[in-house]
Length: 191
Image 1: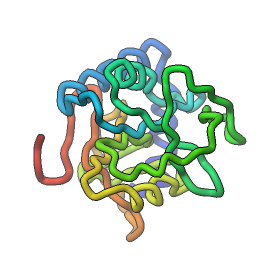
Image 2: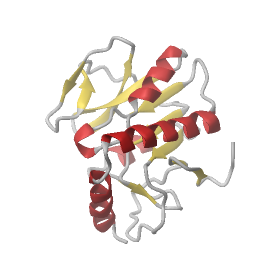
Image 3: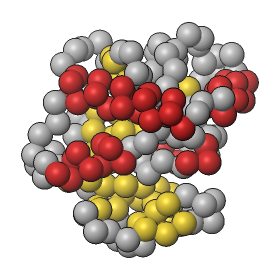
Image 4: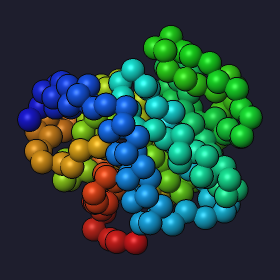
C-alpha cells in the first residue's frame, strides 16, 4: 500500500481505540521494550511526547521509568523547521506548539547525537522497518544526524501486515519495532 493509504487506514484504526485500550496497549509495549532492551543508568534516550488527539501511545510511562533510573531523557522540539533534541528533567516545563503538540519550554538543543535509543512515533511500520509517519519528514532529517550506533525504535499498537510500496530514497528505516505482542529487529542482529 502507498503511505497515504496506510496513513489514512491506521489513523482510522487508532480512532477506534478506547482510553482503556490505549492504556493497556501502551503498557504492553513498554513491558516489551524494557524486557528486550534492558535500559540502564547513564544511557541517553530520545523519546516523543504523545499527541493525545491522535491517540498516540502513552510514552509518559517510559519517561517516568527512565528519569527514576537516571537514564537521560531528551524530547523533540521543532525549531527553524527542524527537529531538535531538548533534555528534560523531572520538573521541566512544557507548552503547546502551533500544532497543539506538547514541547519543552526550553529551546536549547542538547547537541547530543550519540543516543542509545531514539523511540519514534509512527502510524505504521512494515516488516522491513519502513516507517509511515505524519508526512512532515522531521524524523528522517533527525535520523540523518544521530550517530550510527543509535538504535532507531518505532512503537506501534499494530503489528505490520502490509508493505509500504512507495519508499523514497530519503526514507531512513527503523532498526526495531516494538508492538504489544513482539519486538521486531530489522538490522539482521539480535540483542
